[in-house]
Each structure stands twice: as structure tokens, then as C-alpha cells.
Image (cartoon, rainbow, N blue to C red):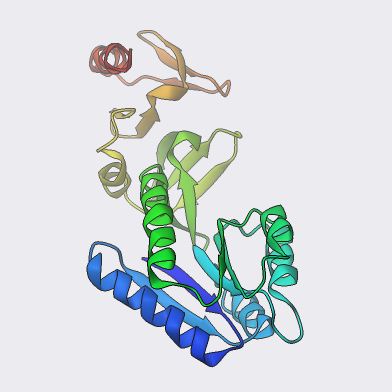
Length: 242
């Protein structure tokens, strides 16, 4: 599910953009979109803060009463929000300001349907590729995206699992090892080690019959019988990668 927000104080423009987005989704049924419309920056910010709302893509008018689109974009970037922003405006004069907040696109009104759809095609292909490199996990009651490259290993801890990350922190997950491995099993770099571990081979510095040495400085002691299949998987992965 992709969250798309449209923020424009002009109701006619708001409806038109929403219709373009709905039309694009009908032609691309593999992409599930949730489209939310806002008539002011203040309304958008209220939803963002009160409902922990964070859209993947924001279509944003620049000229709005109160807080302008540029001001809203700067505030979002200051909050660490990384979603794509596409500015919709009647003037070219704010183009440099728009790209200073890492805007994905700057479209002049009246926005042509084919121009907006072209932006969607480009952005969603990029997003689909990025999502293949992430897991969406529920952590402490919130859904969080975790980069696969950041995962070093997962360790069973009773009914919970510990997901150790590249920065040497860990996250506690209320999932079974089978559920986590099911999410990772399509990726060759992740392999099971005994019944208690899933290891990212990209983070393995070395291994022997007794332990795996990881690039974070941690070590995992191997259970009996685990070394030979792990060794074969390790060499197979790196030979194929090469």
C-alpha cells in the first residue's frame, strides 16, 4: 500500500489531481494506493502529527493561505520525512526553492494528465525497486521499514526474536522465527543457522567449525552439524555473486 497525499487549497485542482491518481491506479492494479486530500498545510500537519501519517508521495500546491507549500516542505524535511514531493504551481519562480528541499518534480498548472502520470510511472518504478530491499515490521506498536542490508542476524529469544542491525543495536520482534524467515527466504544472502539464527551472509567476515565472526565484531557459536551446510551456502553465495 502506497500512501499519497494531495494538498491544495483549490478544490477544483484538488479533485482533478485526485481523479488523475485514481485513473492511474485503475490502469495499474498491481499498485495499491491510498489517496488522501487536504485543503491546507495546517490540515495536513495535524494529520501527520496526530495520526502518525507519513505519505510516500505528496502532491503539494505552493500558493496556499497561511503556510505555503515551500514552507510546509521545509518543515517536513526538518522533521526527517523522506517521502517524495511533487510541487504543483502556477509560477516557475519557485523552482530553485523547490529543488532545495529535494523535490522529485515541479509541475506547472494547469497540470496536464499525461505529465502527472509520467511522474507516477517514474516514481513508482523506483519505489517498487526500493521496497524489495526493505522489510515492513511492527516494532513497539509501530510499522517500521528496515533495510535488508542493515540486518546482520536474527536470534530466537523465547517467544520473541531479536533483530540485530548494522549499527550494533537490536529490535525485539513479537514474531516466530518461521515468520521472519518466510519474509527473508527469497533473498540468497539470508540463511538459517540451526534453529535459533538467521544470518545475513553479507555481514560474515569469517567462519570456522565453531563460530561465525561478523563485521560488527559479534560472534555466533555454531550448533552441532551447522558448519558444513553453512560453509556450502557461504561459498555458493559468493561464487554466484562473483
